[in-house]
Image (cartoon, rainbow over all chains, first blue to last red):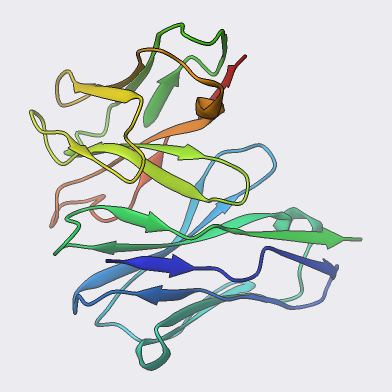
Length: 116
Length: 116
């Protein structure tokens, strides 16, 4: 069965600090997708990134960067120079296609609190 | 584009009452999902519909029924509401593999349900 673990329940930082969110996943599939979603205080779920299992290149988008390591089954997310607008709950998710076709499995989420 | 539209946004029910959450997407997506979000538990899949005419149970289907009315609409019904069903419900959809929008979940704004 597939599983996503976000061990950090809440992270508090002061503005301009960097913050790294951990995500560890479990699957026996060789083909899968990994995601990060952001849920700001307004409640909507915003897609941030998708990575497929064959692409281990790290990615940077502005202040956001993602580190995908198949060897440790991790897909970590770093916010550089955090801002108050980064305060949100961040979810990591996994999609596989074998024993649970098409389902997206979410982690419990990490609450990020950025204070001025 | 409206994307994924859920109604109602808020609802208060008494124990034992029934209600239906409506969801419609205008992106021609094949697969649709219902999740519930509870504090500290992330998003848990209730039911999903891989394509029009099919539905399948997720992690927490007890107490719910679904109907995939057509390609656009996927409703979630609570036949006899219980306080344990107090939650925020999200509908989501994704496109067929190999098409634009595939493998990214697009979410509705959420429906907050309170059962007294």
